[in-house]
Length: 97
Image (cartoon, rainbow, N blue to C red; front, top):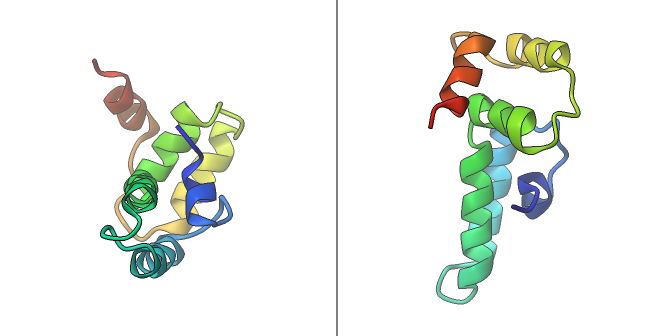
């Protein structure tokens, strides 16, 4: 899988609103009628980054685990007003077959 941040042309520390705005810009630019492959890649990248929980899953389990767990938990605590998700629940949800 390609890096969803690279597909959307965003830095890895982008917030929800920045990701959403960039997705909408790209969807307008690359319509499914004229660019079906590019549109599909953009859609898949957005789906994997659409909210903080999916971004954390990507960073923990698909991106080589280069970030420390403490840094990821700090991001979760600082960047969202949504209810906090325990790390054990996040790991358990991803590891289920």
